[in-house]
Image (cartoon, rainbow, N blue to C red; front, side):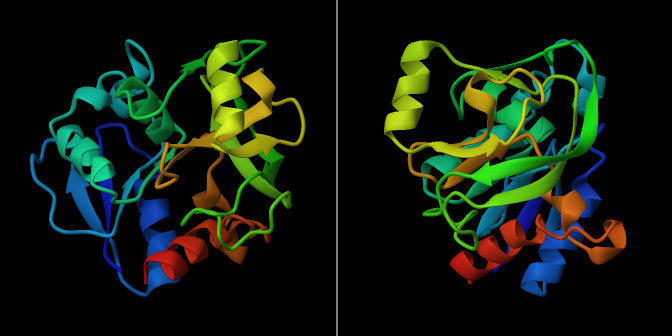
Length: 221
């Protein structure tokens, strides 16, 4: 399995994701600079967390127009799985790859702690290693993670089984406590929690996040 991690100015979780992917797949991912206009053939693309462009304007808004994003969107449309974590999720929203908006957290505070998250659907390459309804614990670290959709869009996401993850407690004010959503084919996943920060025992003993990467490796092997 060959993966690519897209690196933006301000990314700070790109190396963490690369380490988690290499541990799961046995091969280091390609690190692709955001100004590149072409991508080699890969089985997975990851948009990592961080503060692309310093989070000026809106989180992810400038990165969504980086040259490489045209290729990322084309690959996603062709069926290549794309994972967006935190700032990567914000990029997906800004690029029109996923519906909704990510607003300032309820309470207007940066949230940084490990939270309970429920896995809602497991028929995707990202969540196949979990049991449906399983509760895990994954770190969050964001200021603009309050996921908002209108009632009609929420009903559609619920009906299509596209809510991937929900917070098990109030975290940031997100509609229906949504922590992550799938694209319409479930081969795109955007989530605010950071699984790469819970992928190695040295990070504090919790390795619930590792199973996202094990799931991807197993599904795409």
